[in-house]
Image (cartoon, rainbow, N blue to C red; front, side, top):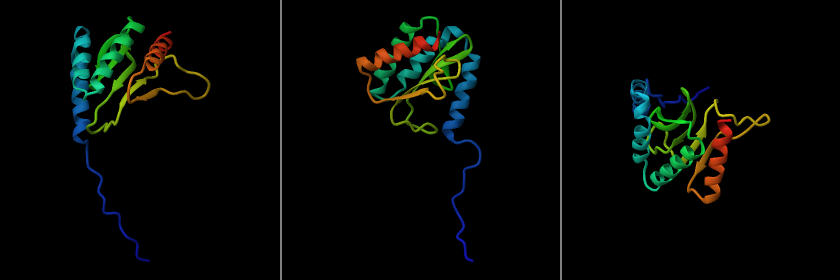
Length: 145
């Protein structure tokens, strides 16, 4: 039998975006906690319009809903941590490795959102309505209980 061979080659090693994320993470580990807020605001400032304004608003909602969470970057993403554990984060990066089409608001394992056998932990946002703001606030409050 004559079988055609798949000639598509997988790239070896990390792609440029993955290398950038790793470099960002190394810098984050070196930074002290006092720089967390400014690093988060700088990461949000890099987001494309109109997501930048959405990121700023989400930052304000998260900080108001859970003032005890520490702002920090996590793999270059704006994130909010309890102790050294990232509870929630924002992501809007249209470049590799993410290739995002919209803002993502997500939670990590330390968030207390477990409900039943399955629950959402990442949300896609194309815009931020008043109802969305209320939902984000409620989820953040629930996540840190």
